Length: 319
Image (cartoon, rainbow, N blue to C red; front, side, top):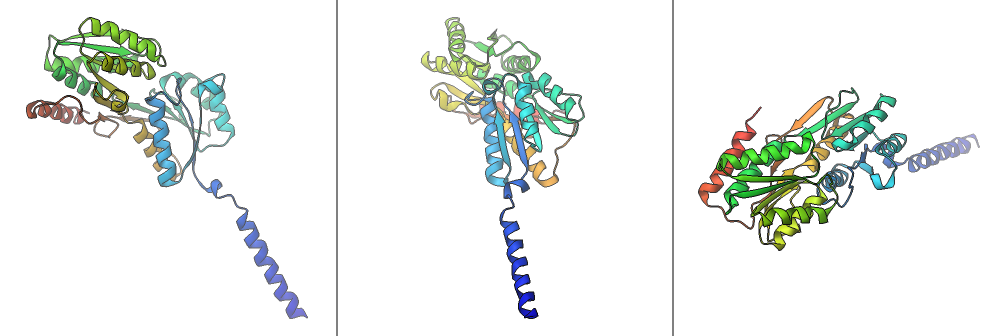
Protein backbone atom coordinates (compact mmCIF):
# COMPACT_ATOMS: atom_id res chain seq x y z
CA UNK A 1 0.00 0.00 0.00
CA UNK A 2 2.87 2.34 0.84
CA UNK A 3 4.47 1.56 -2.54
CA UNK A 4 1.22 2.41 -4.30
CA UNK A 5 0.92 5.71 -2.39
CA UNK A 6 4.46 6.71 -3.32
CA UNK A 7 3.79 5.87 -6.96
CA UNK A 8 0.61 7.97 -6.94
CA UNK A 9 2.51 10.91 -5.40
CA UNK A 10 5.07 10.82 -8.21
CA UNK A 11 2.29 10.81 -10.81
CA UNK A 12 0.60 13.77 -9.12
CA UNK A 13 3.87 15.75 -9.04
CA UNK A 14 4.55 15.04 -12.71
CA UNK A 15 1.05 16.10 -13.69
CA UNK A 16 1.37 19.23 -11.55
CA UNK A 17 4.69 20.11 -13.18
CA UNK A 18 3.32 19.65 -16.69
CA UNK A 19 0.27 21.71 -15.79
CA UNK A 20 2.42 24.60 -14.55
CA UNK A 21 4.57 24.47 -17.66
CA UNK A 22 1.55 24.52 -19.94
CA UNK A 23 0.18 27.73 -18.42
CA UNK A 24 3.48 29.60 -18.81
CA UNK A 25 2.91 32.29 -21.39
CA UNK A 26 5.60 32.01 -24.11
CA UNK A 27 5.05 35.71 -24.89
CA UNK A 28 6.60 36.60 -21.54
CA UNK A 29 9.97 35.24 -22.72
CA UNK A 30 10.15 37.43 -25.82
CA UNK A 31 11.67 40.90 -26.00
CA UNK A 32 9.07 43.61 -26.41
CA UNK A 33 9.34 46.95 -28.21
CA UNK A 34 6.78 49.75 -28.06
CA UNK A 35 6.80 52.61 -30.56
CA UNK A 36 5.16 56.03 -30.58
CA UNK A 37 4.80 56.87 -34.28
CA UNK A 38 5.37 60.30 -35.79
CA UNK A 39 2.54 62.77 -36.28
CA UNK A 40 0.88 61.38 -39.42
CA UNK A 41 1.26 57.79 -38.24
CA UNK A 42 0.63 54.71 -40.34
CA UNK A 43 -0.22 55.39 -43.95
CA UNK A 44 2.24 58.26 -44.35
CA UNK A 45 3.83 56.15 -47.12
CA UNK A 46 7.16 57.27 -45.75
CA UNK A 47 8.68 57.55 -42.26
CA UNK A 48 6.24 55.76 -39.93
CA UNK A 49 5.49 53.05 -42.47
CA UNK A 50 9.22 52.33 -42.83
CA UNK A 51 9.72 51.99 -39.06
CA UNK A 52 6.70 49.70 -38.85
CA UNK A 53 8.10 47.47 -41.63
CA UNK A 54 11.37 47.10 -39.74
CA UNK A 55 9.58 45.98 -36.58
CA UNK A 56 7.36 43.60 -38.55
CA UNK A 57 10.48 42.00 -40.03
CA UNK A 58 12.03 41.70 -36.56
CA UNK A 59 8.84 40.08 -35.28
CA UNK A 60 8.79 37.56 -38.12
CA UNK A 61 12.52 36.76 -38.22
CA UNK A 62 13.84 37.06 -34.66
CA UNK A 63 10.66 36.75 -32.63
CA UNK A 64 10.21 40.11 -30.92
CA UNK A 65 6.80 41.42 -29.94
CA UNK A 66 5.84 45.02 -30.64
CA UNK A 67 2.95 47.41 -30.29
CA UNK A 68 2.46 51.01 -31.34
CA UNK A 69 0.59 54.20 -30.61
CA UNK A 70 -0.52 56.92 -33.04
CA UNK A 71 -1.19 60.54 -32.18
CA UNK A 72 -4.75 60.24 -33.48
CA UNK A 73 -5.45 57.70 -30.72
CA UNK A 74 -3.94 59.70 -27.85
CA UNK A 75 -4.24 63.30 -26.72
CA UNK A 76 -0.47 63.79 -26.67
CA UNK A 77 2.74 61.94 -27.44
CA UNK A 78 3.32 61.86 -23.69
CA UNK A 79 0.10 59.93 -23.11
CA UNK A 80 0.94 57.32 -25.74
CA UNK A 81 4.49 56.85 -24.45
CA UNK A 82 3.28 56.57 -20.86
CA UNK A 83 0.80 53.87 -21.88
CA UNK A 84 3.65 51.86 -23.42
CA UNK A 85 5.72 52.26 -20.24
CA UNK A 86 2.82 50.98 -18.14
CA UNK A 87 2.56 47.95 -20.42
CA UNK A 88 6.17 47.11 -19.55
CA UNK A 89 7.91 47.11 -22.93
CA UNK A 90 11.65 46.48 -22.78
CA UNK A 91 12.41 49.41 -25.07
CA UNK A 92 10.16 52.27 -26.13
CA UNK A 93 10.82 54.22 -29.34
CA UNK A 94 9.81 57.83 -29.99
CA UNK A 95 9.75 58.28 -33.76
CA UNK A 96 10.55 61.76 -35.06
CA UNK A 97 11.97 65.01 -33.74
CA UNK A 98 8.49 66.22 -32.78
CA UNK A 99 8.27 63.48 -30.13
CA UNK A 100 11.42 64.60 -28.28
CA UNK A 101 9.92 66.93 -25.67
CA UNK A 102 7.23 64.48 -24.55
CA UNK A 103 9.60 61.51 -24.67
CA UNK A 104 12.04 63.30 -22.38
CA UNK A 105 9.24 64.14 -19.93
CA UNK A 106 8.34 60.46 -19.62
CA UNK A 107 11.98 59.31 -19.58
CA UNK A 108 12.67 61.63 -16.64
CA UNK A 109 9.86 60.00 -14.67
CA UNK A 110 11.03 56.45 -15.47
CA UNK A 111 14.86 56.46 -15.24
CA UNK A 112 15.10 52.65 -15.34
CA UNK A 113 13.19 52.37 -18.62
CA UNK A 114 15.13 52.24 -21.90
CA UNK A 115 14.00 54.68 -24.59
CA UNK A 116 15.05 55.43 -28.17
CA UNK A 117 14.63 58.79 -29.89
CA UNK A 118 14.79 58.78 -33.69
CA UNK A 119 15.73 61.93 -35.60
CA UNK A 120 16.89 64.04 -32.67
CA UNK A 121 19.55 63.93 -29.95
CA UNK A 122 18.75 63.78 -26.24
CA UNK A 123 21.15 64.24 -23.34
CA UNK A 124 19.19 61.97 -20.99
CA UNK A 125 21.09 58.84 -19.98
CA UNK A 126 18.22 56.41 -20.54
CA UNK A 127 17.54 57.64 -24.09
CA UNK A 128 19.50 56.27 -27.05
CA UNK A 129 19.46 58.80 -29.90
CA UNK A 130 19.44 57.64 -33.53
CA UNK A 131 20.00 60.15 -36.31
CA UNK A 132 20.72 59.83 -40.01
CA UNK A 133 23.04 61.64 -42.41
CA UNK A 134 20.18 62.87 -44.58
CA UNK A 135 22.49 65.38 -46.21
CA UNK A 136 24.49 62.51 -47.73
CA UNK A 137 21.47 60.88 -49.35
CA UNK A 138 20.03 64.22 -50.41
CA UNK A 139 23.38 65.10 -52.00
CA UNK A 140 23.08 61.98 -54.14
CA UNK A 141 19.47 62.95 -54.94
CA UNK A 142 20.75 66.33 -56.07
CA UNK A 143 23.35 64.69 -58.30
CA UNK A 144 20.65 62.52 -59.89
CA UNK A 145 18.36 65.53 -60.34
CA UNK A 146 21.10 67.62 -61.97
CA UNK A 147 21.90 64.79 -64.39
CA UNK A 148 18.20 64.45 -65.23
CA UNK A 149 17.03 68.04 -65.71
CA UNK A 150 16.56 69.64 -69.12
CA UNK A 151 15.56 73.10 -67.89
CA UNK A 152 18.34 73.36 -65.26
CA UNK A 153 15.60 74.20 -62.74
CA UNK A 154 14.79 71.97 -59.78
CA UNK A 155 12.31 72.14 -56.90
CA UNK A 156 12.48 71.18 -53.21
CA UNK A 157 9.51 70.97 -50.82
CA UNK A 158 10.07 70.65 -47.08
CA UNK A 159 7.50 69.58 -44.51
CA UNK A 160 8.74 72.10 -41.93
CA UNK A 161 11.45 74.77 -41.84
CA UNK A 162 13.49 73.11 -39.10
CA UNK A 163 17.16 72.02 -38.88
CA UNK A 164 16.39 68.38 -39.71
CA UNK A 165 14.55 69.20 -42.94
CA UNK A 166 17.09 71.92 -43.74
CA UNK A 167 19.67 69.10 -43.98
CA UNK A 168 17.66 67.55 -46.83
CA UNK A 169 17.43 70.90 -48.62
CA UNK A 170 21.09 71.80 -48.22
CA UNK A 171 22.33 68.39 -49.29
CA UNK A 172 20.08 68.42 -52.35
CA UNK A 173 21.27 71.86 -53.46
CA UNK A 174 24.94 71.01 -52.87
CA UNK A 175 24.62 67.77 -54.83
CA UNK A 176 22.94 69.49 -57.76
CA UNK A 177 25.50 72.28 -57.86
CA UNK A 178 28.37 69.79 -57.76
CA UNK A 179 27.22 68.87 -61.27
CA UNK A 180 26.17 72.31 -62.47
CA UNK A 181 26.99 75.37 -60.31
CA UNK A 182 24.51 77.54 -62.22
CA UNK A 183 21.53 75.25 -61.65
CA UNK A 184 18.49 76.83 -59.95
CA UNK A 185 16.64 75.21 -57.04
CA UNK A 186 13.27 76.60 -55.96
CA UNK A 187 12.62 75.93 -52.25
CA UNK A 188 9.29 76.01 -50.44
CA UNK A 189 8.10 74.79 -47.03
CA UNK A 190 4.62 73.34 -46.48
CA UNK A 191 4.60 73.38 -42.66
CA UNK A 192 2.55 70.21 -42.95
CA UNK A 193 3.64 66.57 -43.27
CA UNK A 194 0.19 65.15 -43.88
CA UNK A 195 -1.41 67.10 -46.73
CA UNK A 196 -0.97 65.56 -50.17
CA UNK A 197 -3.23 68.17 -51.80
CA UNK A 198 -0.98 70.95 -50.53
CA UNK A 199 2.06 69.09 -51.83
CA UNK A 200 0.44 68.78 -55.24
CA UNK A 201 -0.41 72.48 -55.32
CA UNK A 202 3.14 73.51 -54.38
CA UNK A 203 4.58 71.17 -56.99
CA UNK A 204 2.24 72.57 -59.63
CA UNK A 205 3.53 76.08 -58.95
CA UNK A 206 7.14 74.95 -59.30
CA UNK A 207 6.39 73.12 -62.55
CA UNK A 208 4.77 76.27 -63.94
CA UNK A 209 8.09 77.98 -63.26
CA UNK A 210 9.86 75.32 -65.36
CA UNK A 211 11.20 73.06 -62.61
CA UNK A 212 11.35 69.62 -64.20
CA UNK A 213 12.80 67.50 -61.34
CA UNK A 214 11.21 67.76 -57.88
CA UNK A 215 12.30 66.44 -54.48
CA UNK A 216 10.46 66.61 -51.15
CA UNK A 217 11.16 65.83 -47.52
CA UNK A 218 7.59 66.22 -46.39
CA UNK A 219 6.02 62.86 -45.57
CA UNK A 220 2.55 62.40 -47.04
CA UNK A 221 2.64 65.98 -48.35
CA UNK A 222 5.49 64.85 -50.58
CA UNK A 223 3.37 62.05 -52.03
CA UNK A 224 1.13 64.75 -53.51
CA UNK A 225 4.22 66.22 -55.16
CA UNK A 226 5.11 62.86 -56.71
CA UNK A 227 1.66 62.40 -58.19
CA UNK A 228 1.54 65.95 -59.54
CA UNK A 229 4.93 65.43 -61.17
CA UNK A 230 3.56 62.36 -62.94
CA UNK A 231 0.43 64.22 -64.01
CA UNK A 232 2.49 67.05 -65.48
CA UNK A 233 5.03 64.68 -67.06
CA UNK A 234 8.09 65.86 -65.16
CA UNK A 235 10.45 63.86 -62.95
CA UNK A 236 10.56 63.42 -59.19
CA UNK A 237 12.66 61.87 -56.44
CA UNK A 238 11.05 60.08 -53.51
CA UNK A 239 12.18 60.12 -49.89
CA UNK A 240 12.63 57.86 -46.84
CA UNK A 241 11.47 54.69 -48.63
CA UNK A 242 11.26 53.54 -52.25
CA UNK A 243 8.33 55.63 -53.51
CA UNK A 244 8.50 54.56 -57.14
CA UNK A 245 5.18 52.75 -56.95
CA UNK A 246 3.27 55.94 -56.11
CA UNK A 247 4.18 57.53 -59.45
CA UNK A 248 5.80 54.98 -61.73
CA UNK A 249 6.17 57.32 -64.70
CA UNK A 250 7.87 60.06 -62.70
CA UNK A 251 10.02 58.72 -59.85
CA UNK A 252 13.64 58.36 -60.97
CA UNK A 253 14.85 57.14 -57.57
CA UNK A 254 14.24 57.74 -53.87
CA UNK A 255 16.52 58.92 -51.10
CA UNK A 256 16.37 55.92 -48.79
CA UNK A 257 16.41 56.78 -45.11
CA UNK A 258 16.50 53.26 -43.79
CA UNK A 259 14.50 53.62 -40.60
CA UNK A 260 13.39 50.01 -41.12
CA UNK A 261 17.02 48.87 -41.01
CA UNK A 262 17.62 50.89 -37.83
CA UNK A 263 14.57 49.38 -36.12
CA UNK A 264 15.64 45.87 -37.08
CA UNK A 265 19.17 46.45 -35.79
CA UNK A 266 17.80 47.75 -32.49
CA UNK A 267 15.63 44.64 -32.18
CA UNK A 268 18.68 42.43 -32.86
CA UNK A 269 20.65 44.17 -30.12
CA UNK A 270 17.78 43.73 -27.70
CA UNK A 271 17.40 40.02 -28.44
CA UNK A 272 21.14 39.29 -28.32
CA UNK A 273 22.19 41.49 -25.40
CA UNK A 274 18.99 42.33 -23.51
CA UNK A 275 19.62 46.05 -24.01
CA UNK A 276 20.39 48.60 -26.71
CA UNK A 277 23.52 50.64 -27.27
CA UNK A 278 23.57 53.83 -25.22
CA UNK A 279 24.39 57.32 -26.44
CA UNK A 280 24.11 58.70 -29.95
CA UNK A 281 24.07 56.46 -33.05
CA UNK A 282 24.49 58.22 -36.39
CA UNK A 283 23.78 56.29 -39.59
CA UNK A 284 24.96 57.26 -43.06
CA UNK A 285 25.73 55.56 -46.36
CA UNK A 286 28.58 53.55 -44.82
CA UNK A 287 26.30 52.09 -42.11
CA UNK A 288 23.47 51.33 -44.57
CA UNK A 289 21.33 53.99 -42.93
CA UNK A 290 21.15 56.07 -46.10
CA UNK A 291 21.17 55.25 -49.81
CA UNK A 292 19.38 55.48 -53.13
CA UNK A 293 16.61 53.25 -54.44
CA UNK A 294 17.12 51.68 -57.89
CA UNK A 295 17.28 54.11 -60.83
CA UNK A 296 14.18 53.89 -62.98
CA UNK A 297 12.33 55.95 -65.63
CA UNK A 298 15.46 57.91 -66.64
CA UNK A 299 18.32 56.22 -68.50
CA UNK A 300 21.80 57.27 -67.47
CA UNK A 301 24.87 56.76 -69.62
CA UNK A 302 27.80 54.80 -68.23
CA UNK A 303 29.64 58.07 -67.57
CA UNK A 304 26.66 59.52 -65.70
CA UNK A 305 26.26 56.40 -63.59
CA UNK A 306 29.96 56.52 -62.84
CA UNK A 307 29.53 60.06 -61.47
CA UNK A 308 26.75 58.90 -59.13
CA UNK A 309 28.82 55.92 -57.95
CA UNK A 310 31.91 58.05 -57.37
CA UNK A 311 29.96 60.50 -55.22
CA UNK A 312 28.46 57.62 -53.27
CA UNK A 313 31.97 56.30 -52.53
CA UNK A 314 33.23 59.77 -51.51
CA UNK A 315 30.31 60.34 -49.15
CA UNK A 316 30.62 56.84 -47.69
CA UNK A 317 34.23 57.54 -46.76
CA UNK A 318 33.37 60.76 -44.92
CA UNK A 319 33.87 60.66 -41.17
